Length: 73
Image (cartoon, rainbow, N blue to C red; front, side):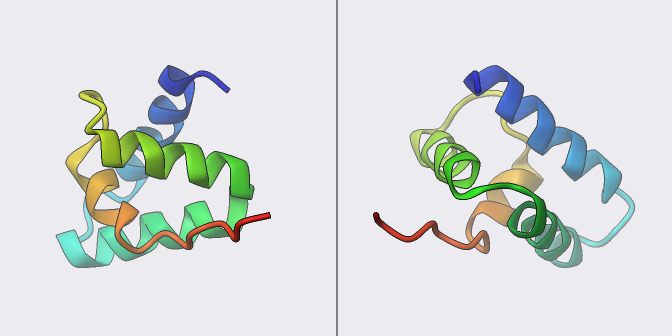
């Protein structure tokens, strides 16, 4: 998946939780990504967040701290 599409999808999830307080939103975003995204997508998003990709929502960046890290193969 392209980085742009992945960021777009993550930002959409953040928008869905926009009315929640910051900490609650970060937890909800991370839970959603953990539940519905495969290890490859999570790894790619975490790499983009770590690299400071410019279009990632600040709420997605906060959630990235809570997203389950994929196990190494």
